[in-house]
Image (cartoon, rainbow over all chains, first blue to last red; front, side, top):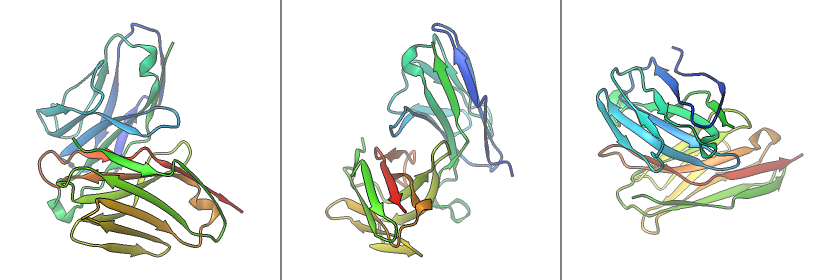
Amino acid sequence: NAGVTQTPKFRILKIGQSMTLQCAQDMNHNYMYWYRQDPGMGLKLIYYSVGAGITDKGEVPNGYNVSRSTTEDFPLRLELAAPSQTSVYFCASSYSFGQRGATGELFFGEGSRLTVL
Amino acid sequence: GENVEQHPSTLSVQEGDSAVIKCTYSDSASNYFPWYKQELGKRPQLIIDIRSNVGEKKDQRIAVTLNKTAKHFSLHITETQPEDSAVYFCAAQSRGGYQKVTFGTGTKLQVIP
């Protein structure tokens, strides 16, 4: 299993540009999450999904959009990039509690470092 | 919603000493409390977790305690080693509903050789 795969690993955007961060998991996890981590800071939830076709906002959703058309993929769309969106973005996935004896542990991708200039 | 506070934000210990990181949570519906370790430039990874029906759990040099009444939980690392240097995050999660995970702000642990 590849686990959680994020692309790209690095990206520089100009103010006002748009882009999509890709996230794919091959563990058949129901739950998927997008977090951002600013330098020296904690993890803030942007959006999450409990299954294909179902998404909901987290703590900091403004300026982002998501979709979940399949169990495997959970892309994050940035519209009209702003310097405040400079951050490291982590995608994560997990089983439902009790599914296959799972605890709800989050499995993270390697992260995508985004700089908006 | 859930709010998780974590202290201290930085912690320096001598190699071989113990380290303790404390967290509090606000939502009594939270019933799963994982701890993640993030090495510099790496992704967070689970190191230990505890469920609300358990008061203490130990895994070699790492232990976690939970006080449901006070809504406190703590990470204890004994006999610290330089490779324990990292940022540690506590989290609180509800097993029901949307299984949202709320993280603490992190503790940067430095183990001095």
